[in-house]
Image (cartoon, rainbow, N blue to C red; front, top):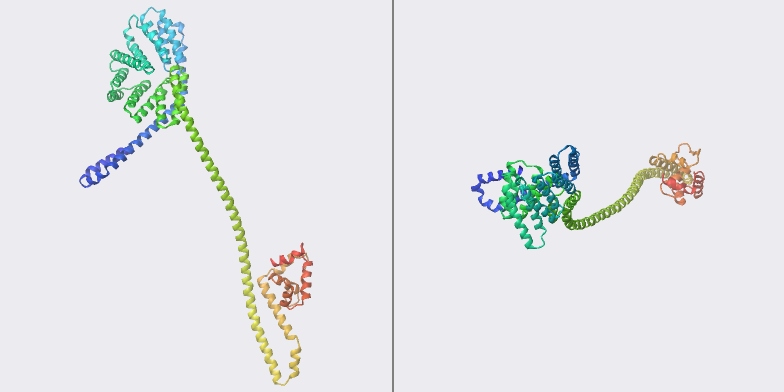
Length: 548
């Protein structure tokens, strides 16, 4: 519908703008033709794919159809035969014979034998000839063409009843057509085909005018004369004017498919074969041609999977229907398709192995990448942690530097002021000729002790501003109950100041003694005293202090 709309729009636009766009359209004509052809091909492919899906559905469900058909036959077979006279029983056997046609040849043969035996007790040429023609039909389906001809000759020895002529001529026509297919020489084939045409013409004369089978036979005769188009028109016209059954649809479609095959129209042939195969499945037919021909067509077109499945289905149905002749035909074709299918499966298996190998390889590479990525992430996390520690240390170091630089500048300025005041006082005493006082002031340590106390007070205050929890943290490293004796007016004692130096990274005892203005023995004793009070490993005590 969308394609029709597109086409109509295009045509309308073309006619409305012909004078302005004639030159452009000439250039683009090939492009439009290609696009339209492509769209038509896509629609045709989609239609065939849908038909194949329907056929697959019917193939999967054919066992239920066969079971239903068999149940109907069993109901007929269970009818009380002893209550019927010979003629009614002959008719009932005929119904069962017809229902077994193309469904189970062995069962059909059983009822053909019953009809033949029963016809001998009925003194009527019609029953005798009909029974012999039934036997001929079964022999023909079994591939026993010589016996089939003998039964036909016997049925026509004293002439044929008028009502049986269509059946008789159709058997002759079909028989000689089959014999032509299996002729071992060209001369034999020509002879059999000539006989087939002869009986086709005879069949045309006795068929009911305007009937479906007359139209099919007429189309077959036209094909024999090479008039394929006329044959297609004949069948299409009849189907458009009449309603036909599933088995008639199968016959019409297979006839059309054979005509399209002669014309080399593969897509149309495939479409008609699918229709015929679907009709065969719906009519519970086991001995058919359409599905086999469709399998061969698909095989030659490269669709090996469907060709293999359909050929297997045809063989299974032929065996189930005891169609020995058809089984032999299929047995000659099946190995070719099966071999191609096995090669196709091997290629597919190799591709699957290659694909799976690629997946495994990719998975392995991905696993390696993930492991490497995880390792790198752990490494980056560790580096990030180290950077954070380093950043904290640098930040702490900057704080310490800033604090001590400020304190250093403050103390330096204070000392300068004090020394300047002390110098002025000494100078004034010297001017006043108070030499004894000057000598006494210079000999005294009061000024030095005062400045040292100021240094300790500033050191303690600066350190505890940076590390306010230092004293408590140190107590956590010492045995329980440890207390520090701190002089009044001070914040730290000698032991704590030594530990403060260690926390600031000054670990050499001589440097600590010089910095704090303590003797070396005092520093040594303080460090020993603190280690003796430490919890756990004493040798690692100072390392723990350095990390507080």
